[in-house]
Image (cartoon, rainbow, N blue to C red; front, side, top):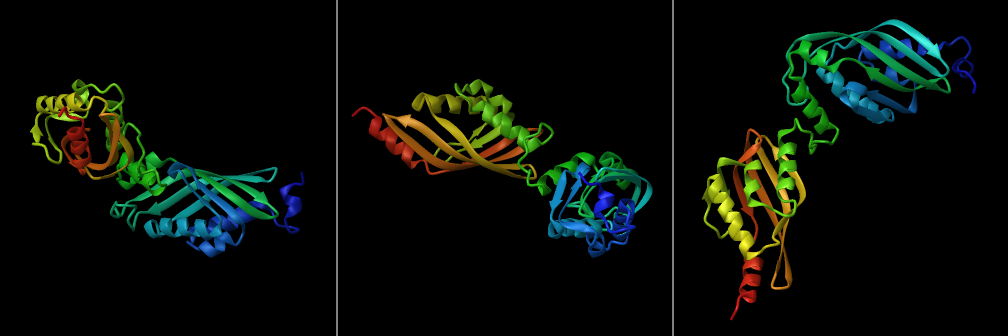
Length: 292
């Protein structure tokens, strides 16, 4: 394999290209930074879990970042070269002058050590892997790191994450477990508070865990194999919305009804569940199966 230096124009060192890229970024000059990059350049900001592929996507990510940190700068303190790669390290500094997701500007600054790995190809930067301590960044900016991490997951399209620290995701996992056959109404306390309220179309509302368990026992007495299958879900604040398919075999006939359940959570369990669905298919099937 030919070395990076052999691919570059005569007299141009890989470290000079990295220095030019870093200097342009420190001036928020996106076009200048990308001028020394390949068209398929990949920017991998490892602490954020965000990867931009191609100049257009990388430019969009940098515009978002610079809107939050308009005075971002990187001081290079050293570089090391290898076969088609440069590793650089130093200190990054910035002030939070714009919003970061839902977080208002704090006006506070950070100064953090960093390291970057730059692969090179055909005399241009092929990528950047950017490392720094996000926990330290949040601490210096006065931001809650767990909430910042949750918003970064949302930005990456992982807002439906079911990680244990995600209250909505953890609740959904418990909901799935409750409906895992055989369903036992005694497990209702894993998803419903002692004072929880349940509302379903055509039925009187129940208040309290014991009343909720009794309602489920009555349901399974009528339809022993009744089940709720989760299709997808979303969350907003303390509200969780589950899109479901309700199924039961009634008199040898499978009944399937789409439904949406809205849960209001408190400390990881529901204080209220309101179901939205058309109960008529179940009622008609039960009527047809009843002894004449």
